[in-house]
Amino acid sequence: MKSYPEEAIRKFAESLLGNTLAYNWLAENGYNELLILLSLIRGKKESVRWLMENKYVELAAFGNAVLGDKNAFDWLLKNKVALWALVCHAGDGDKQAVKILTEKKLHAHLFLAQAILKLNNDDQMGDLEAAHKFQG
Image (cartoon, rainbow, N blue to C red; front, side):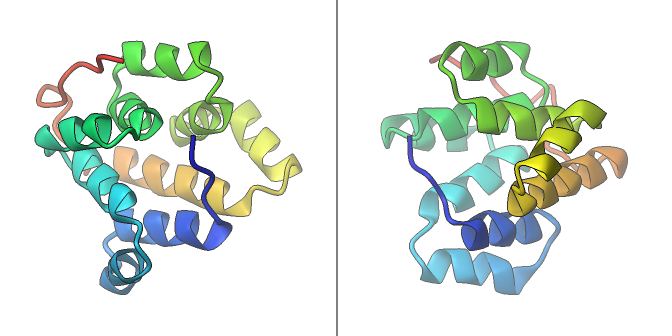
């Protein structure tokens, strides 16, 4: 599992919120997998295939979990991808998850969770019906 620097997570969150400069930063710095994850969260089903084929299984699971796929979330837990599972919980408004991210000083991940929560509240996530099932 790849570990991402705080700046990349923050730029990913900003991209989710529509920041074109952050999107460009991700592209210019070689974070293509995060751009594909962004497409998945925005509802482009074919993105999960690219993530799986390029061995970013945890990102495929995270993206589908963000879209409400319980099997994908369970996969994160089963495979000990706790940080991404925690961001999912915080992105659903779980106060305990927010507290843990805050206590561990995972500010960029907390910002990502807040971006997910905002998109959920604004109903701007990808079509949940269109998100295909995670198979990992």
